[in-house]
Image 1: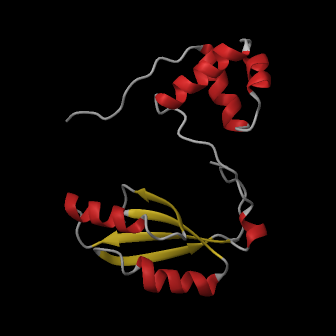
Image 2: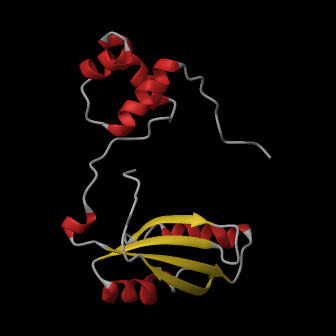
Image 3: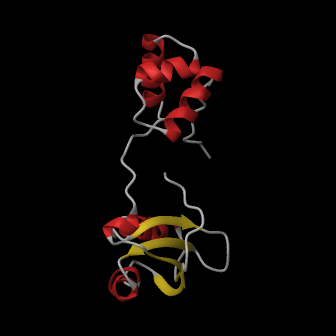
Length: 156
C-alpha cells in the first residue's frame, strides 16, 4: 500500500519555529527570528517552507467555548452496521457536515467512532444526537458520555 506521508527534514531551527508558533501563532517575525536565533528574512523563508510542505496547516483564533455559550461537551461512541470502506467513506463525509461535532476519531474498540460534540446544553445535544448523529449513514447504535468538567483541553 502506498503511503501519502511525505517526510520533511527538520533541523533545530525548524523545530523551534514550530514549537513557538504552536504556542503563539500571532508572534511577529522579528520576535520569532530573535527567539530561534535567525535573522528575519531566513526565518520568514523557513515559515513559508513549513507552510508549503504542509507541516503548518494554518493559523486561527482560539475562542473560549463557554464565553460563546458552548460549554456542554459530550463524547459519543458510534457503532456502525457496516464497516466496509465505502460505508466508512460515507460516514466520514457526512459527519464532517455536522457543525456541533468538534472531533471525530476512528477507534479500535467495541465501537467504531468517538465523537466530541459541543452544544449549548443537554437539550440541544439530544436534538443533535437524535436528528443528526443517529441519521448518519450506517449508524447502528450510539452511547453518550457527558463531560462534567474539562481539566485539560488542547487549544488546537
